[in-house]
Image (cartoon, rainbow, N blue to C red; front, side, top):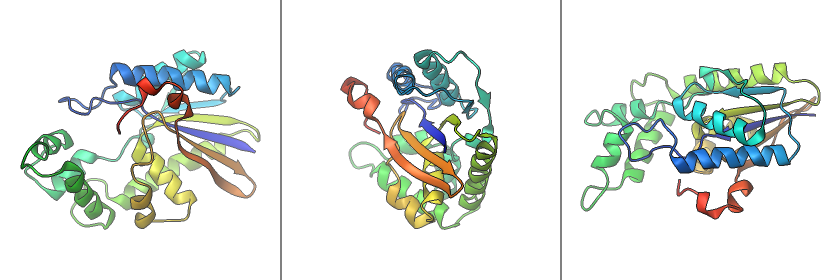
Length: 225
């Protein structure tokens, strides 16, 4: 049996103009998850990362904590869904997710989670002219996963640094679900949370989802999202 471990990036800069960078807490989270994987005796034969800045920074911290050197392959298919486009397509008044967050926060301005939930619902339903529709996004994530599976040795392990939406797409596929499953498990993928997958002749099996035992031992490193 081989294993694939998907690691969500560390805490990103949620309220900053540039979301795509980890905070100091996010870097510490990445180091701790690396230490956790090393403590579990994991020696990956494949280490991958998306190409976003928060992926690269998380991968660097993870490798520092795990002591695995600095050899990481990058593959843009592990990048997150385009949240800015999802927001912009739903409401053209907002160019980015950060702009929508600012507009839908504070007294009398509405609730961002409600707004983003509606935008995400339209994306999942295939409504609107999105740059990367839900079906296209999931197809490229599934292709990336299939390539990792094909590279695994019979008892090998792959570690992939990615994002929560990608973890959701993978978990949804293994569970045999679609958009409704996606919505039910949305938000279950915290910063540096692990999605552990087993692969055997019977196919892929989900072992854990959103696992953060490494952070629960360091509660000061837990994030609110």
